[in-house]
Image (cartoon, rainbow, N blue to C red; front, side, top):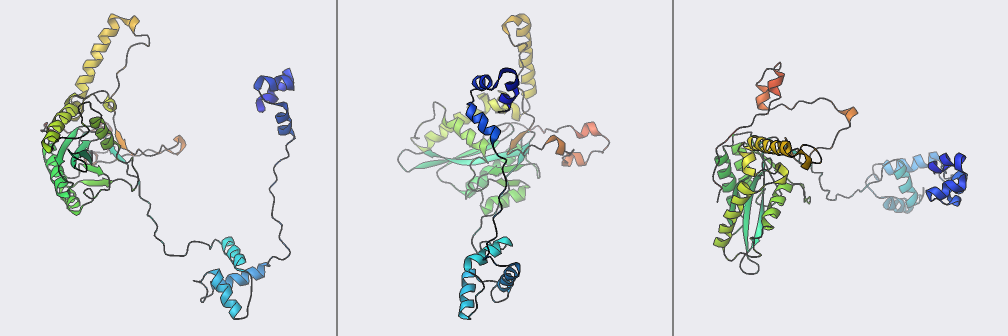
Length: 368
């Protein structure tokens, strides 16, 4: 409407409405619309006075009626040959004083905090899950346990079993931590809220190893996206069958799939590098080599690159599970995240305090 009003002095109302596709009647209704006036409900002549309402509230607050519903209060007072107001009026008085709520002791689900996990390098945050693989006949399954590093997408450990067991999960996590050289206070492991994930023996193992545990919120399916995406990648492979002929058949296929995933698979989330390259510190050398190849190609035939010199997809500096909500610029304040390495550095050495420490470990074999 404002556009029509802006053009009306120059070209007229009819032409402006026709050009903008707005009926003239709509414009006239908009011009003649009365301003909205907030209507106040008139107080009926039969309404209780302020003194009467205060008296009713005092009765409801009395020791004998403080835990009773208004219906019981009205009935009790009638038996005592007293009447103040109706049950509905009592509810209105209580609502006006913010005293109406669910008074029964009902189960209320607690508010679970959204897990917010940050990884700036390998072996900082692992995600693990269990998926079912169909067996040779109906209602038979094999259980595939997979532990994934969310920064490098590297599968640090996997296990195929005939059943789901907390003891097997404990063994898998313990062996994976040993092969990756995990030290106390270094690692956070995220999982859903399955029985194996929340078992007492697994919680005790993580406490002994100094590992921080993290779990999905109940009934939230996207708190563990990295494990879910990794399972989808494996199950969409052409060689992945609808059913496995035997346990040994599944074990043989999983060995090949995880070898392909770690060593050969170029992952779009890590700059089209393989998980092994990122996990074991080869990413910078590979990206530099790619940059040199593209630079040579651009210098040889610049006319083939219509958008200018090509730019490589970078390796993410940080990977989040549920990144925090963005803070408006006017409400931001400088925050320094203190790590054990930063605590040991002098505060005046600002350049050194900004460095990210990445620990290199020797490549282990994939756990079977």
